[in-house]
Image (tube, rainbow, N blue to C red; front, side):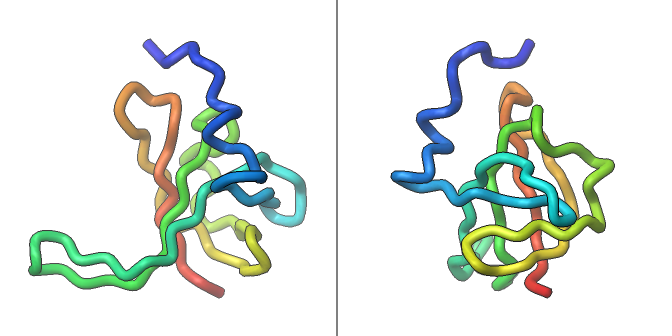
Length: 94
């Protein structure tokens, strides 16, 4: 069962989020993480990530162009998080 709380506070562009477009069409706000990632000291990656509302992005968006914060990205995967209300977008800078 998906969370029923109002997620807009988390995706407010006055704080952490950026407005995004998907293939040139407004698609909602995302939180972009461009930081260097290190998982368990074994896998290193500089691929950016984004958190978004699951109601705005799905697996059918894989391969689409996401633009946010002045940068364009290719969506590599869409991964549901926790209760499914939020997705993690694995991105590649284009």
